[in-house]
Length: 259
Image (cartoon, rainbow, N blue to C red; front, top):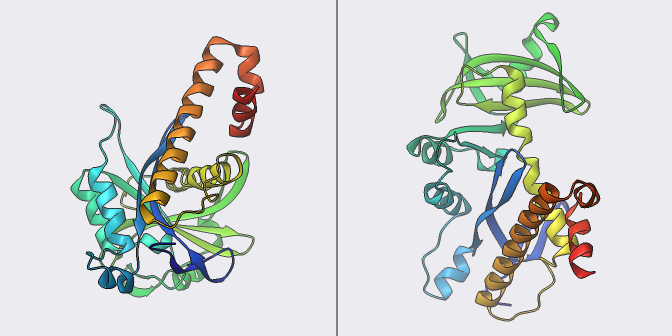
């Protein structure tokens, strides 16, 4: 298969053979859909085929730059810790977008005149500074503070005490509360739900094509199918309350359309 290669899979914990795709997903209240996708091709393969090489960071920046938000809305770019770098935050800033992400436990920050990593800061915080808040029925123990991060500037850092230890959330919005930072980041999980749905119901991974172009066409068809089914579910829910209650998941809509 063209343009396939060994890529690290976090769920497998090792490098696996396949395609690596960078995507963006748009969420606005109950409305959500995939926006753009780019195939990441390793440098060795690009050089072999005399093609320009682009890192996953570059592909993500291009997608941020290409995005046009709905008029009258504010845009927040949410991304995981792997993409937390100055190129991404600068791309968001250049478009006038806010951003929120998660930081690795060894990330360096400057706080109250001291330089340390975020884990050291968390361990030094008094217990009384942590507050319990509920987000979508789930309780979180949070402490928020202002800090300065190299290549990110002044940020709002939120320390979360969770069952498996400390987690760290970062945003450029210094005026946000700890709850607002975490609520904004949790929206990112929509893309994980999307991937689960399109793999289970729309055959995202079910292709056997030699040409890389064919794989890209397949992914676009899957993304378009998801968007149309999502719009259909919203339309049906508005016209029929009874039917709308039956069409909760993407799988429900797929089965209804088939019938």
